[in-house]
Length: 160
Image (tube, rainbow, N blue to C red):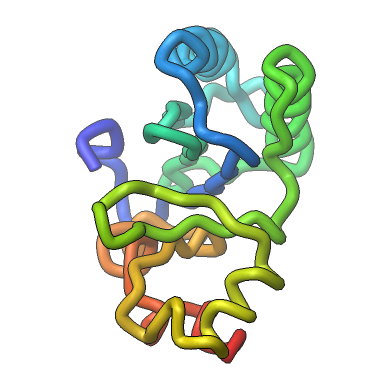
């Protein structure tokens, strides 16, 4: 991912997913908020190597390269605070982990509740080859191979 080029394998990633597809104007405004937050994001007064940005159409990535300095509880709390402000301003939910995303047969990202996805798996609407987004990954090394992946290679397979 281009915005994370130059970040080490020690980089910690948090992925937050909106409960709805964001409009282009919202993405632009949220990215501005995240850029401003990123300029000040620090741990115990020390600036960290960080990146915060929207991945269209509904994901917010926050990353801290922990090769030289690790994120503290207070720095993580400050990131949650800005996300809560974004939630309020745009009337979205970024913390509901029961919202799942997958890629439909037309290549479009779709959202679905976990229970509905589970029922779809049982009914054969979704298969082990359905592309899903594993927002539980937490490292840069997992991003390329384990974020956008098939049901068979993700925790989603446990829903069958």
